[in-house]
Image (tube, rainbow, N blue to C red; front, top):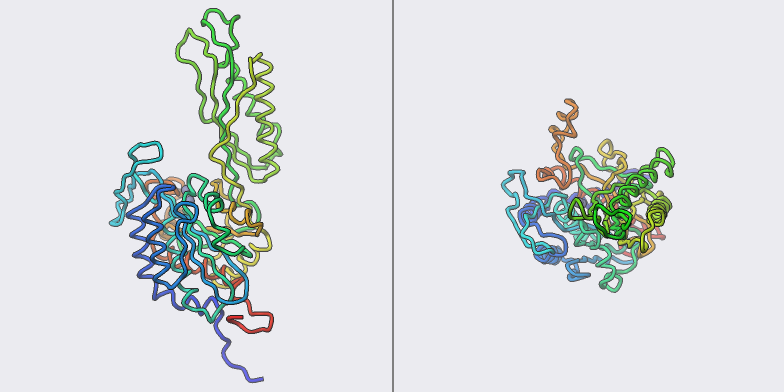
Length: 434
Ligand code: ZN
Ligand code: ZN
């Protein structure tokens, strides 16, 4: 059999166009960074995204669940891959001093005037996904199937993915075979990392109203004191992690707010506790929330509360737990394309609502991180043992990824991971449209 040099991989072929798009992708990124919008207010961002998809010849659907946007590339028979980027910014006053820094202020959902900054790097996610979608849409000979490029609003408030699902998402897109997403992290730019299993924590906030009986501070016999009740509960809640959780299992229960009373000599009639829970398995999540209910109910009974406590759950984020088989496939594609730049991703304490989308479709997913920090600055901080002090993290007023190689790496990661499904030959062995 005659030998010739092997044909380039689909990823190498598709990504051969990367250099040609980095210019507009970087401009797009700088434009978004300078003009961030808060959760549920991503109107201008969504319009720019839809316009850019159109310029790449991609069918765009705007207004999916509010400000969500979906791009669709149908390229014959084959798998359907959903790539997701979030679009919202945070009420943070930017302090980076960059020439494309945000000076934006806006009115938040409570009517307050607040500064706005892309302090979590979602602007980078958007630019990367637009770049990846463009490269795939303009090189249809190197893959087959359907690409869904999903631009999600309101990740920071935890309800943007749910909003798109409650909107018309399932009417606009076919059910994907797999869903993929990435986040820029405070790690050296150029690196990409993922791992199978729990990756980001589930988060639950709870507001608990405790009922007592108010009385004069000098006549405690007439009262059921909610201040003492709340204090007992706060102490007892510490045992959920210390005495009910397997050592080594990461769980956080933090009581972040406790409010009762107005005056030293008045016993109030109620107290309000707000707490936050972080867990890394659905089983643990359920048992921790159950334990909180059990302890609060029992302490109320022990105090003689006139009525049971009221519970309100809010700011809830699902667990992000990468499917093992899917992640193996992504990690193998990363290792083959990125070589030494592909690393394992440590478990993160943050939370995300991305998994609501694959969970609703009942399909597996993989989530990975890309570094966003100038590699020289990172390594210098590492050598001095000052990473925690000197390297800004997401949500910091100083967090802004270096554009390159972050942007290029993020585009590459999305294309490489998508092609792990879309780039496979058809059953008859041919590559390309079925
Ligand atoms: Zn964030
Ligand atoms: Zn984020």
